[in-house]
Length: 261
Image (cartoon, one colour):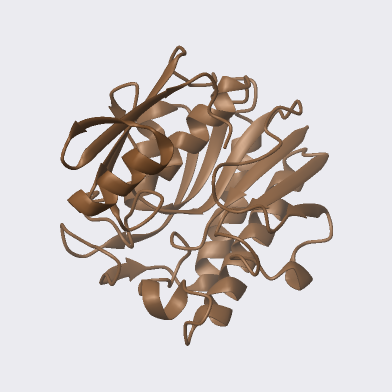
């Protein structure tokens, strides 16, 4: 059973301050990467116990050094590193299921923790009129290759987004926001790293039983990608640089044939 894992940092238990924990020069960045790697390892252990035979993880928290400490990664897991954050590569290579680890809610998700959609400048994003963030795009991109999403570990807002698209999947909620508007410096109710790993390990093993029972999700092509930026200036730059359709001062749109980044 071949499992593809998308990894991010902002949905990791204990990670609540974007500047201090998620930027490469943040004071607590090394610690946050260690927690994220421990969560991935727990996922790997659970998936192996559930019958996985091959596991590959994409470090989706930007280019090198990314959000994982590869020296600490479970030896049964290979890592796609320094591949940027434009979307999971290699999803067209016959995977049996998509797992996600350390994921977060979309921009302005109610009760989110470090909620954002791809980058802080983006206020909202839609795929074929379905509003989503990174969670949804990972599910849709996998689904476009016939790969079902069966597991997600992250905050409650991210888990709710995933379940809306793939109702039969298994989630491991490791934290949730304490205010309706979270943002990038958010108070949260979080499991400890050790407790989060115990939960992820158990739920990942459980999720292996769902492989073959959850259908891939993806809208029909062509794919219309609509992005609303937080500033007029950013929308102007993106429209000019990439030749996008301008829908209003803040919003641009493009149509693509595939979802691969």
